[in-house]
Length: 117
Image (cartoon, rainbow, N blue to C red; front, side, top):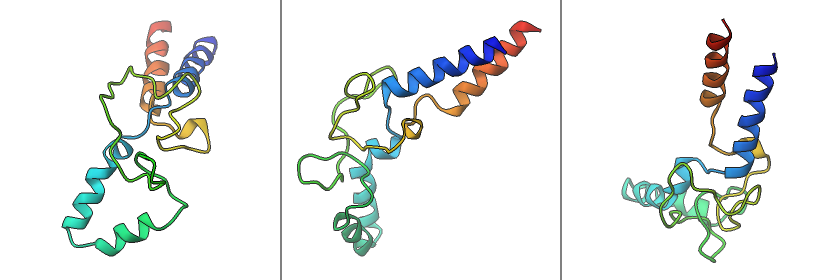
């Protein structure tokens, strides 16, 4: 049980410290462009004129409709420790961030179980 608690503690710390957005938030500008190309301009206009959902990156127009700039490898921290970049998509809860996922937590637990037995 101790190994399980240690594994989940590591998972919680990594999730809170890195604040990694999901991939669709990183490339949100490309997704909106593709939706427009597919003929759904009204969907894009509806997204741009609302204030409830904030996906993508805000370049100052308060639209959160752009790609996140720069290089985002898995080890790069989004903003500061436990303080994500204010221009990036913001989530209400720490566990809504992408990295590390439940797959990593499950792998840690299974690996620890194999190690013990």
